[in-house]
Length: 369
Image (cartoon, rainbow, N blue to C red):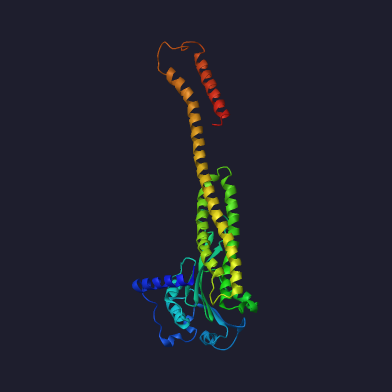
């Protein structure tokens, strides 16, 4: 996917948005000053120069002016900002309205878009939900989103969801000034690497759940767990929706020549892409394995139903013998074999017992009982 193709696609999308959707609201000039307008959404911000956090006085607007003069860059972290707050950020940093719309609405598909010198990446975050026992309603995988605006002199992260915090990642990066000195692209790589590493951890936990449900499914009467298999398959699909669509954007970042992505950073993106492909293969195998387990469970249900029908049929056949004999001798005819003999009653009972015993042993030998 080339930059030119993205620009053409963005132009077509711009036309559709302005034709069908309201534009991002205009913000008065006096509202664009200071970080107070981001109260409740601003998690943290910092100005980095030569890879080190600069603790100068002022707000991020002042830092942005310094960054635009080529003196480092600003990294702003936001958590579920509203439309007005994103409009403030958009006008301060010159962000594209389509990207702002996506960041506001959330629930986006993982993607990478280019708007001039700015890259806009959407990454799905996932978290494994611990549970004592997997039930038909258990939530196994919880998803969220991280949107990253990466442009000249700035990085803006917009997080949706109660997990996927980046505070710890920022602290780790600040201990590696050389890495931060590579520019905004290095921050984008660190976030992508952090997200993909979480995929690996979640995949390992889901693997344990699948191994357990597989053992239970093939145990006696294991088909009773079929609803749990179906629920786990739905949760794996949630993980698949986060992992699979990200392979294209990550491959683009590993090969894209862009001012925000230094050559040495591009090499690191290749490593992230390799990890992502491994997770994707795992998740696809999970889906296929659960489909096989589900089919095996359905087959077990049919086998169990057939076994129950055989048992019922066998007992019906056994009970039919004394019922038939008793019915015949209950017709009150005068001339019937052994009807008037002294031991006729005991003979008939003996015949019933022998016939039922023979049938029982025959059905037992053939495993119908």
